[in-house]
Image 1 (cartoon, rainbow, N blue to C red):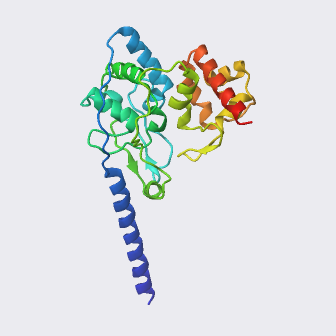
Image 2: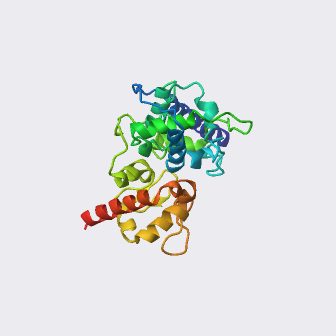
Image 3: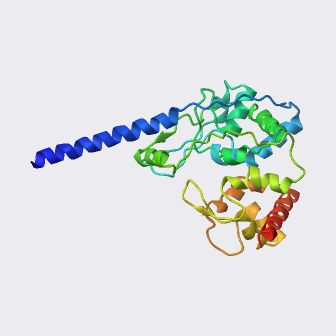
Length: 276
């Protein structure tokens, strides 16, 4: 009798694993139809240099390494996922500019499947002219011997998170980006950078499980000088760990100009005033 129970339990476990793997693999291999869009990609040195600065602000170098050679994350553990943003130059070598734009904004690869982890929730707001500058810079990258090439792999908990909505594809169906970088640069940077983690008026739980505070009221509590220090160094009003915000300024927002930081602060304070 106990042998039959053990066999039944084992059978249920095996069936569960098969269903978990099969259903999650179907999600990973699902195809998405997003039309290709052509934009102007400049060739001049000033545009390429600006594209490199934007690559820092938009987090490309934070995820893929300072030289875009790729980076293997040491978190989460293997039974959740093995995350390794690849060396960019090697990965995009066969992409056209239009395919690369779709990859950045919509999270859709050449074969139609979706990326995962790529923060397209914010990248979808990158304006056409800034996307052109970014692509111009990406085209200057060369493959190197230290490029990360290992694929992303999901462990059992990661696959369970896929099925339950804890991890979502990076696929974004709609095009919301403006044609040119807006003069309202504060809102633009909130949309294209900060919205990866934050909402304006309510806390947001990120895919990593961290709770990002409502950004507008939080920023309103900072003086212009303290906010600039936060975005440059990751140091807040009080000593202590700010979670990801401790690292994001060092990897990304430190490259924003003083005027861009001030405009972002002004926008957030204005949004906080609307909520009162």
